[in-house]
Amino acid sequence: GDSVTQMEGPVTLSEEAFLTINCTYTATGYPSLFWYVQYPGEGLQLLLKATKADDKGSNKGFEATYRKETTSFHLEKGSVQVSDSAVYFCALSDQVGTDKLIFGTGTRLQVFP
Amino acid sequence: SQTIHQWPATLVQPVGSPLSLECTVEGTSNPNLYWYRQAAGRGLQLLFYSVGIGQISSEVPQNLSASRPQDRQFILSSKKLLLSDSGFYLCAWSKGVDTEAFFGQGTRLTVV
Image (tube, rainbow over all chains, first blue to last red):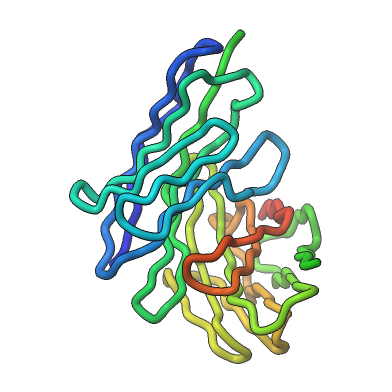
């Protein structure tokens, strides 16, 4: 079945460092792809999304490009801040008649000043 | 505007006791509804999802069941809790593919 694989964390960075969190997926159709973020003590919220190949989602300085050829949707940010410390989840929306949302295991990001 | 309510926020239950967690959505109709479990170090696992009243799909064999008695109500249940049922349970809704999912605040369940 469909699945999402994320790099294991925690990812530990200094403020202003470059961030990459890898995400690859397996799907039978052409899913939409999402990044969700969970800040400490809060619920999950959508960070960005892309609905078709070569689309780039962006929000709050984060970007991710839907790469069909490599089945990837890596999250990047050029300069992280302490306030970006959170758990990041990659997800896909199954389009083959089920509307399921499949999440990866999450990657914890810790940014130090 | 749409809101999602999930309760209780925390719950401590003995092994073998029953469970009922409730989730309701306001401000939308015919949403897709989801129950997830977030176990420590294991990410977000899809337990059940529903695309309509009485339509429940189970993703993993387990000690839990789900029901959707009304369009915007989704209930997670167990007849007899196990220690392994401990975790953080999240309810979510969406309007379908390509759309954002909105999550409740979660229920921290501890089975003792």
